[in-house]
Every structure is written in structure tokens, then in C-alpha cells.
Length: 198
Image 1 (cartoon, rainbow, N blue to C red):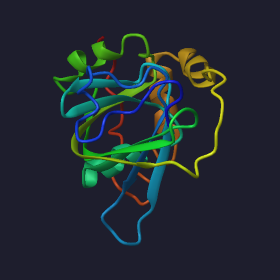
Image 2: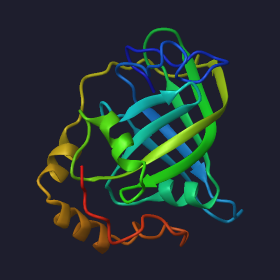
Image 3: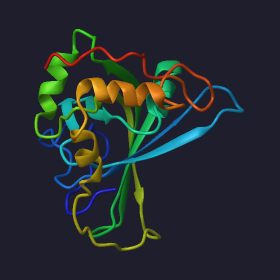
Image 4: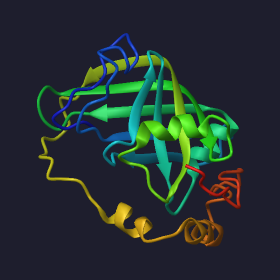
């Protein structure tokens, strides 16, 4: 979804013009496991500052704690991921980025360099950076998408996890049923979490 901003142009990565996602961007992720009997997962995203452009073919978003870790599990299994922006105002556009996803965890040597890109959005519950290497960008009309008005950012998530220490966040992750494994039993977030160093 995108509000007052605009989606990436067709035929290029989100990076191409001039390498910046929409200012008020919310997006959705779609992933699925390889098994035909597994769940397909769709995750709405949009917390300000959590999506950045790395280069002309690569996006990254900051993965925060929550009640599950389906994105991490699915990209670890097969790497397939799709991001979608949908206009609720302005021209009726829908943009999808199809790509290969990779979860970068706190103990990865790339973590420090990646987390710096999310300075304004970073917080105690950051648990992974999801890299998306673009394979295809598709635009379609959104003629049937309803018109809606953006009212503001929800702050509940940042406030809730902002009260937790790193140790408290780790304990939160360990007690949740679908953090270390997905709803289909796939490996998801490796626990215990390494402590934050930056």
C-alpha cells in the first residue's frame, strides 16, 4: 500500500528513481512454503523508516518482534517473496516486486552495516533484516481498490517493545509458540537471540 507517496516505476527496481521508496509507505509481503499443504502467509508492513533501498536491485526491511516469524521461516526454506504496494489515493496503481529474500540475523557480519540504514526506525525488538533481491516488477491497475485516507502512524508496537530490554525481548521470543518455528514447523528465528552490539 502507499499513501501520498508513489510506488516504484515498472521495469526497474524500487531503487531506480532516485533510489527511494514512497515517503509514507506501507506494503504487504506474501510468501509461501514449498509444500503444497503448507500455509501461505501475508504480512502487512508499514512502520515508518523500516523499508530502505540498498541498490538498484535490492531492498531491505527491518523485521521486528511479534507473535510469529513466518517471513523468516519461508525465506529460509525457499527464498521466494513478493512485496506489494497498493494506492488508496491518487492514481489507482498496484505494484508488486517479486524477488528472492534472505534473512540477516544479529550475528551475521553484515548486520552492523545494514542496521545503520534504519537509524530512525531501529529499536529493541529488531531481530532480522530481510533482504529482497528483485527479479521482477509488475504494475497493474487498482480500479477496484477503495479510496481511503491515511490518518497517521500507529505507535503501539514501538511503545510496547520499547519498554523491553534486550534480555526481556529474548525472553518474549522464547515463550512464543511460533517464533523459533513456523506454524508449519519450519525453522524460523534462531534462538536465543544474540545480544545487540549496535
